[in-house]
Image (cartoon, rainbow, N blue to C red):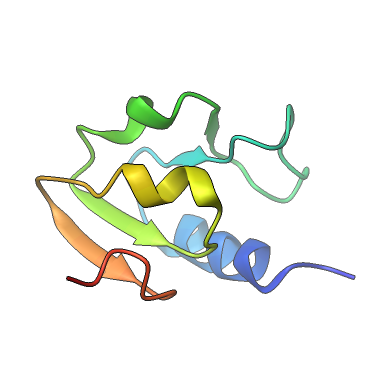
Length: 79
């Protein structure tokens, strides 16, 4: 079974010409279909222009981005 987050990430990667960094603290490698950089350090994405939250891991609760466009599909960063 493929995660909906993986399917969404595949679509973003397909249509985005820039660099894509995926932050996933619970895995060591990305699925082959995801041609992106895996970042396990939660602070690694702080400088991103766009932040798309697709999963509500507890670790993400402490890292609401302070800059850039935020797309929160889980309601975790709403406040």
